[in-house]
Length: 128
Length: 303
Image (cartoon, rainbow over all chains, first blue to last red; front, side, top):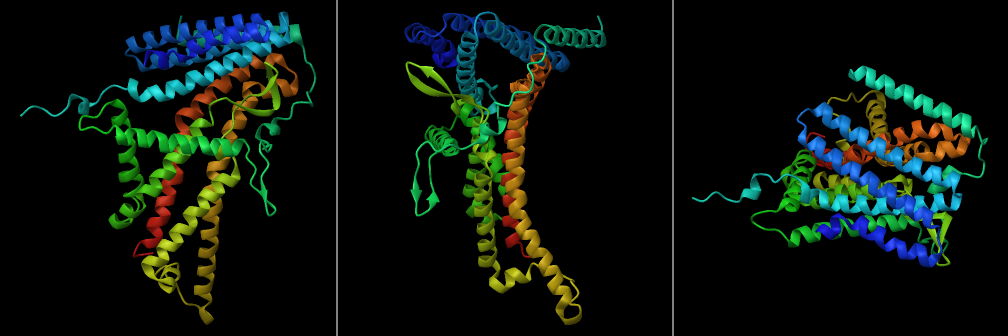
């Protein structure tokens, strides 16, 4: 289950030899990897803070802020690399990032039911 | 700092970034190379033509196959793992099962009909739900723009949904439309079913003109159901995808205004979440519920 949960990181690691062998811009890989790890770290931190809070407005604010902020972070990183290094490096970073997002989104959807809080059925029948 | 002050500061900061980006990059002018409508173009991947009928495999077919595999695979997997003490997945699926059985199906038709048609309505709901959800996964299907990896030209990532194609929603609606008419005729007989289209108390009018008028309106309303059922699902999913496409970068590229990006990107994230969390499930629910209501209406004694 742990491998599935963090499968995006497995793919990120597997992408490195592909970038090296295929001669793709390594700056693109570094950008996508840094952006992905950074935004995932922010997501985990904000999720923890949201889970600890009992105020729904704080939870919504944290989640919305995290989502928008992470999006900006990634878009800005790709944009800066695309403008300052080369558009090819920016494109490589964007493609890798989107591939990672697809994998993360898919595994997240699969794992969501497993992460839901157990209901009373999970306790099983009461002993008579 | 108050919440209002924080929001104001955020808005001012955002505006400053937009102005800064405009000062640095200016406007690249309108981009005529980018054709957003091509995101929905169906290039044949494998051309198959039988007797003038185009049965080519394209990305819409791929999305339909994916939706079918997910629907059948997930439900079969859960069914095989059923236990007296359900785990969390089984509990989630059982909740969806109860929604489909009790609310969508049994809530809109009699018990015997619900037993007969539950599997169809349930499958319809799940198939549309999976179809909609897969539509929010960026998949390498954009054959217009390719990425070169090891010499292989791999299509770039794009969002597409089978339900954003009118042909798919129309055929789903057509199956429902035919099925509920057949079921109505089976329940009431051919003449009885069509006689039921005239509400009780309809005045006959001179020469049966009253009956004819109301019957004509009912005939039109039956055909309109076919259109409304298919267009509602298609238009909602297509509009959602277009909004994400334009806000997520399409508008910036089209207008050549990089400065717009920080604002439109926020809207894109908001639309993406709105579509995934609400619209995908809501549209599947509405389609299945309306199909169920039509079945119930066609066989109800009073209609």
